[in-house]
Length: 188
Image 1 (spheres, rainbow, N blue to C red):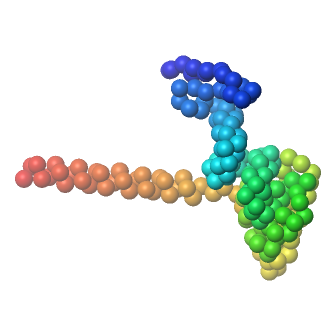
Image 2: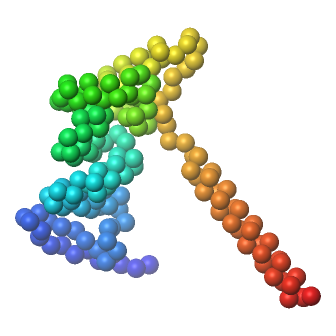
Image 3: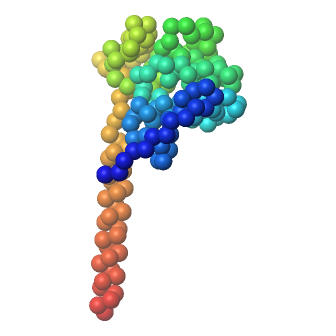
């Protein structure tokens, strides 16, 4: 087992942690590493890579309101009020104009709930405001549906795992058939 070598340095007054592999193997360190890259992107005016990096972090950490707020701030820098309202929707100090823009872009409560990409129940939200807002949104989405149809907050599905297993199995099967055909060709 190899050793993890961490180099400490100073970059613009902040302590920087790097390793020979780019980011450390710890999830917390990887998150900090990506956030440092986001800070550099934003400082240099590169908003698109910052948005992509933050979107990836929000996908991995959907309950982290700070990440959502940072993503909203970058969208706010680009003038995208819809996305700023979307990603800051669960924060308490969100601008009403941004909330209105998000609600106009996603007119039904069910659409807004899906757009937030929240996973699990509202009880997983770290603040009372976010829990209340998610619960109200889920109730409004339930009211939009016909009676008897349950509303489920979107949760991560094992679809990608199943698809990857299917593709991997198909590749192994194709290679096995190719191997058998090659052996039969050698024997004849």
